[in-house]
Amino acid sequence: MEANLRWVLLTAVAPLAWGANYYVTHAYLPADRPLWGAALRALPAGLLLLALARRRPHGPWWWRSALLGLLNTAVFFVLLYLASQRLPTSTAATVMAASPLAMLLTAWALAGQHPQRAHLAGAVVGLGGVALTLLGAGGAVDGAGLAASVAAMLVSCVGYVLAARWRDGADPLAATSWQLTAGGLMLLPVAAVVEGAPPAMDARTLPAFGYVTLVATALAFALWFAGLRHLPAGTVGLLGLLNPLAGVLLGVALAGEGLGARRLCGLALVLAGVLLGRPRTRPPAPAAGPTGRGRSPAVPSGRRPTS
Image (tube, rainbow, N blue to C red):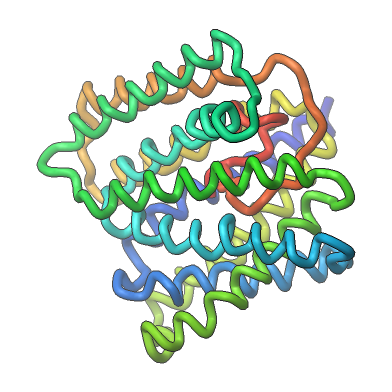
């Protein structure tokens, strides 16, 4: 019992770290450096996890890691960075909390994985909660930030469908390290050409980048996958709900964002939708990507929390 409680507490660090990442990115990282922000998050964390996993890609996993690294790391991290910068922390966290529901619908459309009625009901309820949250955000919602959130979800969904098809032959932590490393390497030359030199590190940005890279990425993924080895998938999936809750609470407590009745109801509907969308059985574990977020109760085995 004590061992299970210890693993619950350790695993809970991951979604809490991912939820706090919205606030740290919004408050402390440079708004005009999304490419460098994503690269400095992905590559060091990928190398750390690669050293921990002690496995290199093999066979088709060389090109699979490159493709998934492009989708699940390079593109996703840039879009998530933009969304975190342009939307209030609580709004970004609530919108991205609907990612598992979007993944459910994408898997249905692209992979023919027919959801049950309860899953569809959860998707409707959760997406309705997102709409209610946006209406209760107060003032005009930044269109570019909202578009970045939606694009991030769509990219992550496609990456998830591919990772689920290629789940055999790779440990999830090792596959994540390959994708983070590949995505970070892809981002480096693009960031240098488009954004110039890396952002200057000072007393404000250096600890923030350290948190995003070491805590919200390397440590969070290591604890998440360790928890999946020691806890039931349903328990880990429920812990994933701490992600949006942490983002909303930090936005309210530290950024002074209002939490009106409409926004609160929207968050409640999103969480209810995710709970309804949880699978009732445990399928084989996919080779999870770093989004996986992500990501989460509506995804098989809760393996893709939004990051």
